[in-house]
Amino acid sequence: MKKNLILIILFIFLSSCGYTALYKGGSIQDLRIVIINMEGDMGINNLIRTKLKPYSEKESLNIYKVNINSEYNKLILSKDSTGKAIDLQLSLKTNFTVNYNNKTKIFILEEQINIKNESNSFEQKKYENVIRNNFASSIKEKLILKLVTIPSID
Image (cartoon, rainbow, N blue to C red; front, top):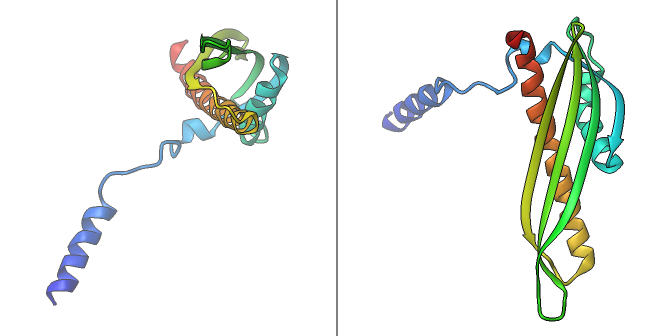
């Protein structure tokens, strides 16, 4: 009896803890992104386009026409005595030009991370690809949040 009571109380607290999904709101779901042009790093642009694909296939009255210009950089921060890179900085700067309701907005979104250079070049390349994918996901999330706020800015 005591065990059942504890389970019921635990269920009540967990089911009504107030958690709601971040994108449950209708305003975020009610948008369509049409990518007009992509310039810069095509690998990053293709990742971003893939991440935005669910928003480009929707039917909505809120149509955002987007131009993407991305710049991905790999900078050597420090080298050892033999001249081999030890620390690297990976950065992504993405400019979005968005047309919505005959108005143009420009958003500049950036990501950056410092990493250690690995001796195994295959593992290093694999790790950098994971970071590029994470950059694209983060940029997509930031862009969606910016797009949702456009009607409230005007």
